[in-house]
Image (cartoon, rainbow over all chains, first blue to last red; front, side, top):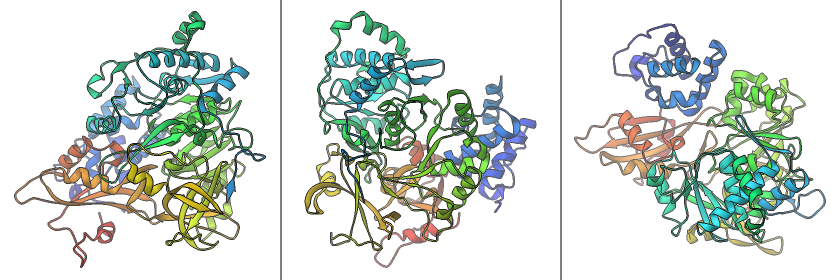
Amino acid sequence: MTEKRDVVCKAAYEQPADELEEHVAAVIAEVLGLDRVGRRDSFYDFGGTSLAAIRICARIERRLGLRVDPAWLLEYDELADFAEQIRLGAL
Amino acid sequence: MTGTPGTPNVPPLRAVHAAVVECADRAPHALALVQGQERVDYRTLTAAARILAGRLAAWGVRPGDVVPLLVPRGAQLIALQLGVLMSGAAYATLDPRWPAGRIASILAQLDDPVVVGRPGDEPLGVTRTLAPAPLSALAKEAEAKQAALLAPVATALDDPAMVFFTSGSTGVPKGVLIPHRAVTRMFGPGGLDGFGPGHVTPQVAPAAWDMYAFELWGQLTTGGACVVVEESHLMPSRLRALVADEAVDTVWLTTSLFNLVVDEDLDAFDGLGALYVGGEKQSPRHVARFLERFPDLPIWNGFGPAENCMLTTVHRMTPADSAAPAGIPVGLPVPGTTVVLLREDGTPAPRGERGEIVAVGPGVALGYLNNETQTRERFPTLEIAGDKQRVLRTGDVGMVDDDGVLHYYGRRDRMVKLSGNRIELGDVEAAASAIPEIRACAAVARTDAGGTVEHIALVYTLVDGAELAPREVRKRLTAKLPAYAVPGRFEQLDELPRRDNGKVDLQALERRPR
């Protein structure tokens, strides 16, 4: 069952800014059951739990081959900030 | 249903630290702990703990005291915990990341305690500090002053060893006081599968939780080793690396994390020797998938509340279980545990009939810290098989089938399990009600088709004229509740649905679509 992002979230949709953000947005949308996720959307706005964070990170790790700590998503809950943490972690 | 200590094939009861010292005497150079690059053998661990025991005594810790520890998980915390036990006291490990108010309400339950933590955490209530340092440095200190070391304090099996904090129903965390006997009862010759020399377990569970003791003392009281995972969550990729690099073979996972690994990366379990899964209802679909891939890997359903330390029953799951209409059973009592089922009127429920699950034996906690009323209520003395015994009334409903196997059916009250964490819905409501803008609220647990809790929803109404965005409600609750108890959904209504008697209709809210 897929929910419409614009129904759950009142703020205007902002498109992911680069390839990494696009990949991460796709995984978050997939795990949380949404049609799309904007770069300024908070994971918590969609009912994100620590278990959902682990699932998202496990999937990103497998697809992109990067190390991703669920604690990053729990702390940096907006997509663009979370993607930035992944970038920093890969350095 | 019973497993009596002292009978053949049941481990003897011991003091926790005495059991660790025994392992150190037997094999001083055997590996005890790994954290990152730090590798600690038994001799180093026990020597460091003795130095810390001496410091604790010098700080005024006396046998029988409860010592709160605000040190993050790791080798140093483990040595400190062992040091507390050597000094004859009990430890209560708190998470420095908890809201300050929650930590304060726990410290207020103790009488002017010595609180050990990191330098800089004094505002949280820390009175004595310990900077991060490798255990080898402390062990060297021990070598230098052999004779001046604190003489070991005699400890009785019934003496308190540790306190676990669980969610209380009125907003104040409940401390469960655990004696030495409860921890050692299930480990050793004839005890649970996967512990002892050559076995390695990752330590991932939060330090305030009873399964922390399972991961840690299960190995350290029997000669096995523990690898500290610093992250709060065990990622499938990390599990894979732990098996390959550290020979990890015995693992505890909460049910929801187990299900996740089965879904996302089933092969990450490859190489394990024993897997314990529990804390929530099992998912037959995930267990079946696991057993299809690993038919010979023992996978145990582990069941039991913190009040009967760590586990009460275990069941080795089979493909047949996952197809059984009654669901996956929780099994037979662990060593040192007897289970009886009582009807509402207090008489024993015969096989096949439902009743409250009551635990008897050395696993039963000493009670709740400074809470006589709740202790009397949950730990009454009952006549069991002709003997008067102190028992734990779990509040769980179950049934023993014709084969003597226990099945679990749910709670009698409003406690739920989410990702293995115990949450009292009343505790969440107490925190939300304290927000001035909130007029009325109810916390409900929403479950998936299999009955597993998916999330906690807070449904609330605001006082007239007030405005409060869901994000703001979440933020305020984060300042009061541990992260796992903060609801995942926030739903503002104009009025809460009520039953004829005026009480909030919780069942209606549980069904409410998201």
